[in-house]
Image (cartoon, rainbow, N blue to C red; front, side, top):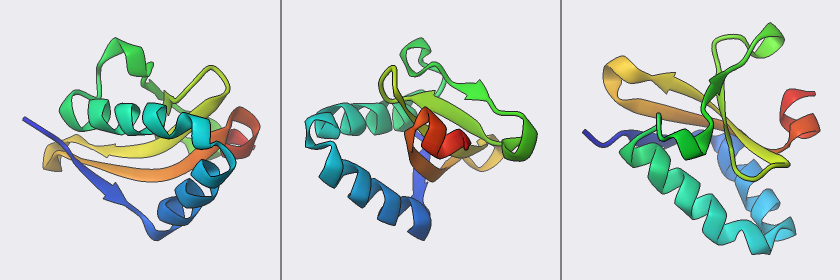
Length: 92
């Protein structure tokens, strides 16, 4: 069952800025989003829950240095995209 990716307005703005700064990651970004749609538990995504002020959210790896923060709503088959950026940017 495919999942629906929900682009929040904040994520849309952040992703646009992120991809403008990191044009070389456009294909990687698209691949990660495709994997999230088809199987968010794909081991290559390294999906993990977050703690602290980001408790209740999850993150997936875009690259070693960059993450996408999201909220999984598995009962409704939705993945709500929240943030993208470096480790310090999304967790700081």
